[in-house]
Length: 255
Image 1: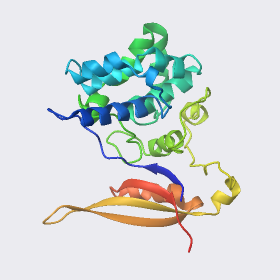
Image 2 (image 1 turned 30 degrees about the vertical axis):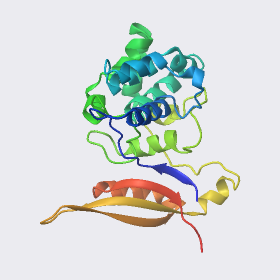
Image 3 (image 1 turned 90 degrees about the vertical axis):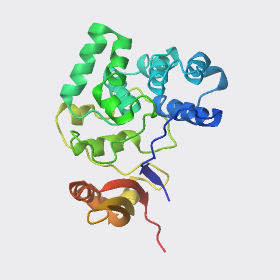
Image 4 (image 1 turned 60 degrees about the vertical axis):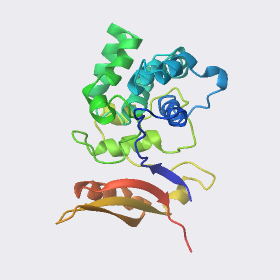
């Protein structure tokens, strides 16, 4: 069963958290911000971790130090095209894909006219970041469910950037440049693998959804939908229109 995308519970560093709690936050931030890169012990930002440990900075401050580090710069800024760098900043720091060419152009201008640190800060200091993650929640992929003010196409674009959870974000070329630049819908492509794309398009996939039911008591139940590859995009749109939150998309097991 191949997991394509899953919704993780937000991880928050609470007051008087234990060292174990802090290490869980640190691992989560490294994994999210560094795009699932394998991090050697010598690459850890020990001074930034110490500032978080002694309360000198919040989780948001730690995220900023990781994203402004020479490590982040060497992984994603120096080897990548400008578009790739910006779409990865959206993914790593806001947990979603860029919506349109206007967003891309704004960040290209920030990067050119104000520099690297200003480009990083424009995400982490934004109202969107603060309203979703605040000071003490580690950023996470959130484009796999409906978001206020975020277009439906954002789900497909975040899906393209995020699927293949075991893989890292290596790669110099932007994945969304044609769709975003041309204001085109982004199609969900079958993941590459040993079975080949043609085989994947013939498979069925299981979408697990949390659906709120309103009445005397507000409850949230899980539903699953088995769909063919060609029906997946439309099914996702229907789920979002009815307020459902997609928890995961997995390959349906045949018996």
